[in-house]
Amino acid sequence: MYDVIVVGAGFAGAVIAERLAKKGKKILVIDERGHIGGNVYDEKIDGIDVHMYGPHIFHTNDKAVFDYLSNFTEWYKYEHRVLGHIDDKIVPIPFNFTSIDELFGAEEAQRLKELLLLNYGADQKIPIFELLKSDDPDLKKLAEFIFEKVFKYYTMKQWGLKAQELDSAVMGRVPVVTSYDDRYFKDEYQYLPKDGYTKIFERMLESANIDVRLGTKSEDVLLLEDGAIYFEGERFLGKVVYTGSIDRLFNYAFGDLAYRSLDLDLIKVADTYQCAATENYPCPKEEAAYTRITEYKHFMIESPEKLSYIHIEYPKAYNRQMGDIAYYPIFTSDDEALYDMYLKVANNYPDLILLGRLAEYHYYNMDAIIAKALKVAEILF
Image (cartoon, rainbow, N blue to C red):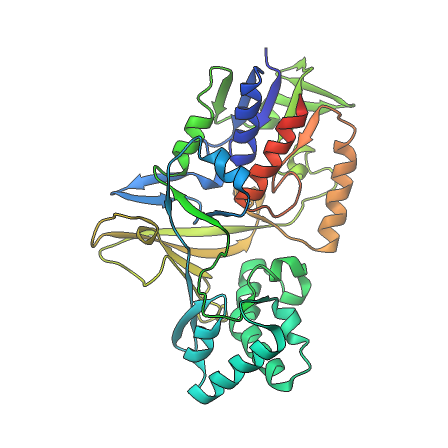
């Protein structure tokens, strides 16, 4: 009945389904949640577009990805800016020249900016670990200050690990910037969808060649056994694109992979709550257990003047028995080794395609997973 079964209705699954349906393939998309869109799902509440699983800002340098998504939405320009609460002041994150001006005296700030320009040049993005290796004692002292105030405690709250225990690529996502450019992202295409993200998924999946079953767990309809795949008790001869967590796919045979999850408190407030869409709290957990607060009306061109909604974000260890959502893989050597064990088993199933952050145990931004899904769809048939 189906050429392809896609597990998961987030971007990875929806893009695959849409592209293969265009090729005339019959697709079944299943998702255990009661909605499409995965963690990007949003809803309009009291006239405010709320991202129900935390904020998602589309940004990319990949024109092909932007052009592809533009088939399903109109856009409006949005450049994300983040503020951080440091030493009783609110300064831009990533740490830049404005941050230095706010946190140091005028003479000291000027001296530090000149040192940064002399050693690294203008408009550069310096990973914190690189700055910590500086031979200049003043720059090293600055790096230690930034590490303490911006990275150390935020990382411990976000990941449950010390910064030194994380993959350097994760830490490099928030560099030190040698300019006054306070945009969080520097990509060429920075937009938000005019009608919200959920509408994108609805338009992607509206093809007559796509059936969608929500509230359906993959383990209730799929069985992998001895290199063969069974769907609802019968041998399935098509392809299965799986975007869920790989340890779940194989019933946790080698143990649980580690993920980070979130508790998100959605609160309705009577007035505008903060100055920016996102404000970070990189202080010790004892001072604030949350990492950031997002206020959604700042994302919008038009929104209620007073009424607002905020998300307060509390990272935590993922616990599947408690029904937590796995948001982020944890990139330690032990977990990567465990993932490789599951991958070896998956390789015994030639018609199984693993795709996405959880299935591949890899951190993808939205644009990156869309690009990957487009590539996989192109070569799949």
